[in-house]
Image 1 (tube, one colour):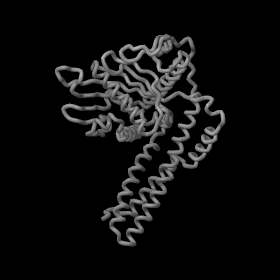
Image 2 (spheres, rainbow, N blue to C red; image 1 turned 90 degrees about the horizontal axis):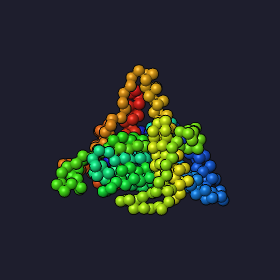
Image 3 (cartoon, rainbow, N blue to C red; image 1 turned 180 degrees about the vertical axis):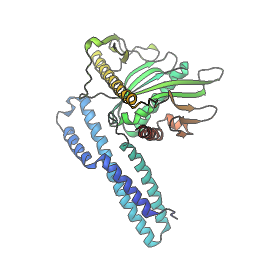
Length: 371
């Protein structure tokens, strides 16, 4: 038998949906879908495969966002009808079904509401994620590879296209570093809360004495540069080195010097690219990621100036933001939000939405407190 106040719950659902619609603007989404549909139907679209993929990806994501809002409005109307039927017939089974649906709608609204909290300057951008092994030797390199798989599986679960740009393999196992793109709207807004130092505690599979090992990996998330961004880098500020691409264990994957290492001399930022087929492609990809990193540096400098002017400088993010403990107990815990999971296997398989949502809400609350 249903145990909730249906009129109050339905009013609350409608109120939340109205708040979401005020931010997401369904009419603007419809116009964007129309524009992207027109671009996607152009006969010469696939003359530029990279641009074509971007257009079709944006169209799919925008249509999905519009459909989510429309479907939730219809579900609220449907559950209201279901409640009326159940009450008129005195059917407890129908009312129990309606209660289950109310809870499901609330969960989906909460997830959609997260999007309304992504109002940062670059939140709507696609993302470039770099993972680097830290302290912990071979375990740290293995951990870096585990994190890369976790994020790629997360993207796969959501249907987000990804593109691995660079991988530097460790000698024994795992990765020294890896860089990949997540090509979906709001990928940066979502994944930016994953930036920081991640910590793994487990019995090391690489220790023949079976000792417990603590290892670390760093995750960097930057917004993908767009052609409209004004990040111009003089050639005199860039040093470019070329080398041969290599795979795990030093296995050659290219017999020419196609890989590119690009250094920004004023800041010391280094970007390596080796996964494209030609040196020209790797150079273009490296320049784009370098521009993205400089864009983020500029944003951070502007934020630091604002905090300094406010006279209250506080570090918003600690060095260690999440712990993955596999031994002596099983738990993944975010040290900022206190959100935790007792199922590390699911987390490493990409089930990180709850952590991302908690991080976004935590960040918004911290920004509101500072304001």
